[in-house]
Amino acid sequence: MTTTWNKPYTTRDGGKSWLGDCARMSLAVKVSGDNTTWSVAERYSDGLRQLATGDADSVEAAQDAAASAATTIYEQREATRRENRPEMVSCDCGHSCPVSARMTTSRGTSCPNCYDRMSE
Figure 1 (spheres, rainbow, N blue to C red):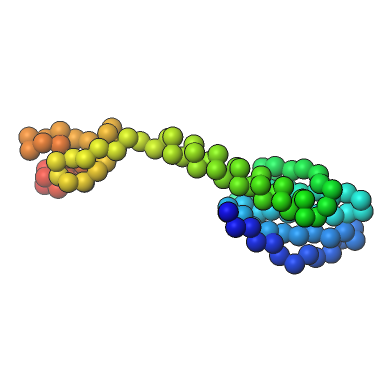
Figure 2: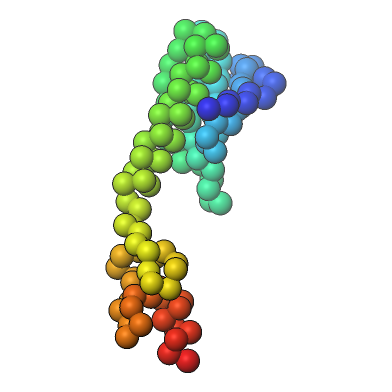
């Protein structure tokens, strides 16, 4: 997964901060004094939701940890999406649809769209 980091900027407290993007998530690394922290968040219309945070010994280690956490979260979500996909079946009309939406007609099986056209 590709991670893009922006140039660092100075924060209000005199520290440095880096922002990045990975797997459609926002990453942040902040250095303030001797403390280096990282976080992974998602942007929503009403703000950010923190998904993971942590401490690191260096900026590079923090950036690696944030990118790794974002990749892990993304892979877990993709696995969940794949597990929750409905079983698809082929209908006699030639289309595929979820098994729960397949209709039985006098001409065989049909997807909901073709069923509506047949009944007109």
